[in-house]
Image (tube, rainbow, N blue to C red):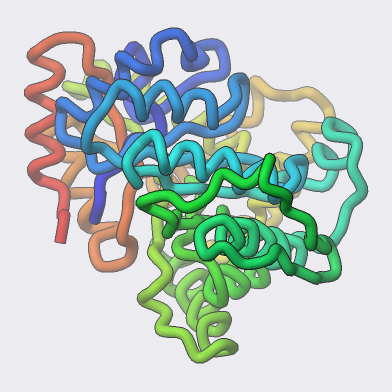
Length: 352
């Protein structure tokens, strides 16, 4: 597995970032350097409070070897041509180290936060990826821009807006998935998939991998061409005493995911669909403090990977080695001792 960090390492809860401790874009370049120094394979950013492409530019300029990627940037609110240019510039700046991770966002946000119309997301994402690659092909191969689909029709590229070929044009595109249709679509045309924290080994084995293979078979593609990456829900700390506080945070995060209808299928596969509906009712009623009571220890330890620093690598290997190609993982690094502890964990994680 390649070991990635969803966020660079800094003053974060182990394996988690709470809403009241956002990543500060002004510190991103330094933290990307820390991630490279401790030996991570990649550093990723999510799109929440800052533009992820701007953070990637800062990280690319401050590092030399580590891969950089969005995990994930919202596709649909952006023109595919605009996204193509952002990725092109970042590949040029980083010397080919940039990976484009895309997500759909849910209907309410697309309609009410971004003010756009809604369409079935899997076909829309297929057209989006095709449009982005058509723009790249136009720039790299010096051919006319010609792309026609249900969602995008592109046939205009003039010299003023054509950046021309670059040294590393093969930019990987990864897609966030959880449902069968999006997963199958990724099997057809994406370079990788990004799995949600609630996805368990059982869900990977019974839902993700079969649907990925189903999509690949549609186009006679080798399913191994599509990497599988996961951002597991992790709770870890140096010792049992500190771990107890982390577990409370992980339980609350699990409860939040339990209440979110988009993630219900990941709980339903373990027989917790009724509890997920109950959590959704709690959410609608604003009963946030009570929601954690719905997450018993069985659910907690099924959804999350929990253990002290000397246990966590073994437990992550047990769950995900052989199932995924990339895993997002981080612990706080605020001192040389922290860096040494993290390097030891990284050395124990399965990188085959």
